[in-house]
Amino acid sequence: MEKELKELAVLLFDVDAVKFGDFVTKVGLRTPVYIDLRVIISYPKLLNRISSILWKLADDAEKIDQVCGVPYTALPIASLISVVSNIPMLIRRKEAKAYGTKKLIEGKFKAGDKCVIIEDVVTSGSSILETVKDLKQEGLDVTEALVIMDREQGGKKNIEKSGIKMKSLYTMTKLMEYLREADKVSQETVDGVLEYLGKCLAPVKTLDKDSNDRLKMDFLSRSKLAKNKMAAKLLQLMDMKETTLCLAADLTKADDILELADLAGPHIAVLKIHVDIIEDFSKDFIKNLKNLSEKHKFLIMEDRKFGDIGNTVSSQYSKGIYRISEWADLVTAHPVAGPGILDGLKEALKNISDDRGVFLITEMSSKGTLTTGNYVQQSLAMAESCELVVGHVCQSKIFSNPELIQLTPGVKLAKASDDLGQQYNTPEAVVNSGADLAVVGRGITEAGDKLRQVINYKNQLWSAYKNRIAQ
Image (cartoon, rainbow, N blue to C red; front, side):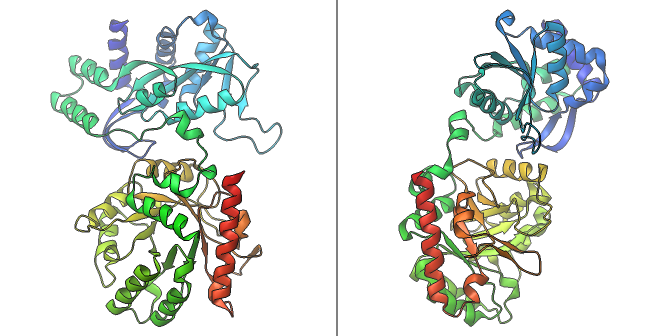
């Protein structure tokens, strides 16, 4: 088999399925080498050879009842294996249909059928683990995954810790060895890739962790899992003060913000501001706000919504008249610029000793928002690969990792909307949709009795949280 694997390695390089440069993987990791097996559908003979040799890795193929290709690249490979071996094929949809049967698993099967997963490339193993979870929920017996390329970044370990045996045609190390032997790459390129592999592991995931419903866990238990110290601090703070209220003090006068912070401080977990709309901003304002946060034990969030390239974001965070990195416990950022935005924020913190955290704006509450589909998935992947991220700004329970915190804006006592596209949901509705920390703004700032409304929102949100974890 090794002779054929060497030949196939050269063919893959020749059809540009192996690329060298600066890339970002599905899980948000930068990499100097990228395996793009989508191109092989344009080379039928190559596709057939790879499918054939991959199937030779299967344990006791005669006892396999189903094959399931992970969308999308592995689907044509699984299809060929299914046709040639005369074994039925299943397709796991990336999301259930919103119409008709609303199935997540397509194909004809019965509980207890032995199913083998087919995948093209493994980095963290998350795609295989998600597929395993969905197949097992349908009663299928899944114990094995056949993979073309193991990037050797922790994926195999993650998969096998979950009780799934993984076999691959290539490891990244072996592929580089074959390409060097065929004089397709330089020794310098090989050394660079191997050095990268030694330094950069993908985030660890297991089936147990993915299936562990964060919505059923209390904040204190979750705080013990959090890698980010600010995330742990926030979870502990919410537990201690029995509040999940984030007050949006979107006011334009410094004294008004300070007065509100002093009034609401004992009852909130986080005070959120937009520093660039404060008309009389000064260093004294920040000093006084920090004193109030220490007095009443709440965190300060600057809702900056960083969204530029890393170098610009680094300067926006640490320089200028605001010097946000010096005083804001938490900030928000759009993932639209890619992982470089997190690199920029980390760079700005190199001389900051205090704990800091970033909420990625993965979904928005405004009508017609574009933060949907693949955008959401890429943002989730970025969060898993960067410990600076404390959680997601989102509207629904789109992630299960109990280490991360869901921050949901757009909360009012009655469901409503405004004239500018903002949509509001009730405290109970947002908590049941996954919110750990809920943002309330105008429902409090425009109230006649602000303290009464603060306490009202605090109590309703906390009650909904307690009911959620008790179910």
